[in-house]
Length: 96
Image 1 (cartoon, one colour):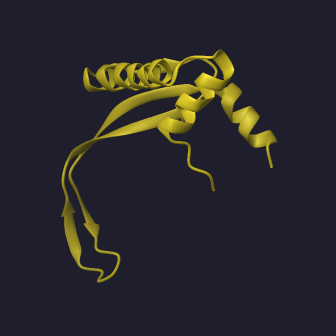
Image 2: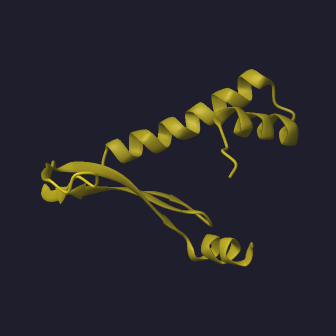
């Protein structure tokens, strides 16, 4: 399994568009900052043809420690969720 890092994304921008390293890293940072800021402000982030990011509020609940089986309280929290677009799902499902 390959991991795509910010460096990989910046290098792709440099290679495809001829940007400087500084400009490509700055673009990646701006994109991620905009996504983070929108999610923190409770907004959904929709990227056409890719999917939607949003924050879900999870209630506190009782769970179990998988090693010991002892019940434990899982605290309430917010989690980031991603819902792929139908177009993206089609592309991924056709790749094998």
